[in-house]
Amino acid sequence: MAAHVVTISSGKGGVGKTTTTANIAVALAMGGQKVACIDADIGLRNLDLILGLENRIVYDLVDVVEGRCRIRQAMIRDKRLPELYLIPSAQTRDKSAVSPSDMVRLCDELRQEVDWILIDSPAGIERGFRNAMAPADMVVVVTNPEVSAVRDADRVIGLVEAEEKGPARLVLNRLNPVMVKRGDMLAPDDVLELLAVELIGIVPEDDTVVVSTNRGQPVAMDAKSRAGQAFQNIARRLKGEQVPFMDLDEKKGVLGWLSRIARAGGD
Image 1: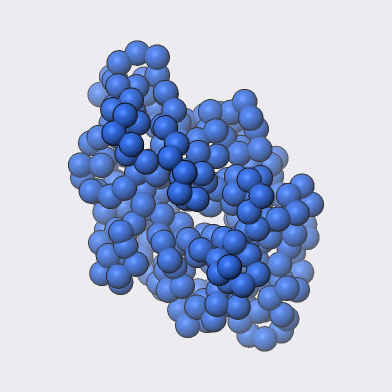
Image 2: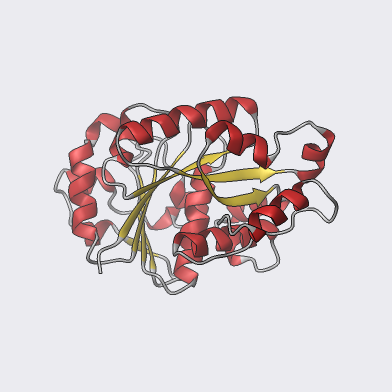
């Protein structure tokens, strides 16, 4: 069966795109799916750190593209999750070292080997983004509920549609229900009204994400973490399951909105 290629992108840097990529990959692998992650952020690799695989890098994406190794040689297998692999980015090259056609060829070769290929795109809309988008069957855009991040996400969504890779899906990361209720943060319905795309996940603000990232153990492995559960739910939605959104607040506001989405089957 040919793999699904999902590119995970963001307009603004620092919104949690790479963390989202790592955790969706882990959640899919925990569910028995064979997953290959590709870090396409050449020169600024971080996916290896979040997955805890930084000490096992021998070959990287540019080595594969330039023929210095085979794909299998560059794929690092996660010892905790045997179905999870990483092709790391090059740290000492720039994004011009890889072309969109290189990424298409790489993913075409991988498609018969795995169930999912997740591409961690560089933030923004320059060369690296276009490289990452070229082989995509689906594009997931990650944003925070902040005005500047949402505006940049809107730009990315427009480019996805222009390249006929849409419609994009949305992950709303680091939502703080208390701040939403105070009016200090955009509510989910405000974000959706602005972006007009399908929401596949809301990840609550959670201190365990920082701790797990620093330890190289993605939070999706933590059954007690609300953010980890949110990433697990996103992975299930990507597989086509109907999963209700979590209750992020016991009072009205965000909970009421999420409940309406769940009742409407808005996954």
